[in-house]
Length: 217
Image 1 (cartoon, rainbow, N blue to C red):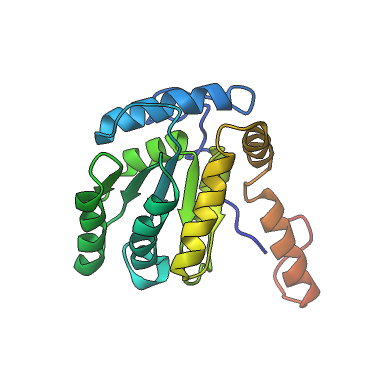
Image 2 (cartoon, helix red, strand yellow):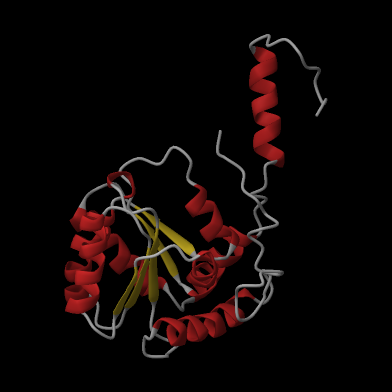
């Protein structure tokens, strides 16, 4: 059963942290404006036409920050125009990996190695693609948050080459009608706990768990 998420905290139509609020009908135009604001905030060249890839996560083995860092040089050889924003904090060795990627590709990569909730919201709103390189993901809230904000997810296991090539394919789609349709398809879904809660209730009732009646909250 897929988790639900807090759809009030993560709501692009009411998010106080993003530059331009939006819903599914205004997402394409608004995300371009949010991208420009994000680029300016983190110090990347401001250009809404450059595909922007994001990585957000705790810097520990599970989330695969080392995989993401290793994939960046390969991706840069494959794609001429791309920007990457990396956000997270955790183990120092992974922080150094992300900062090293920024040093190697100035003007294309920015690494923010500190906790910044506001920036996480801003990245969700402004990025085109969200890279999820987790070795395992029992919860998967980051994907739901990305979908809620119309940011398409690229989910790959811990394989550096696969991450690079999949990101390359995703970047080619950015800015096309197919990408716009993906944004709409992501945003029209109900990602709240309403469905998952009902599914869990049905599972527990099927197991004969005592202490509740169907429909009782």
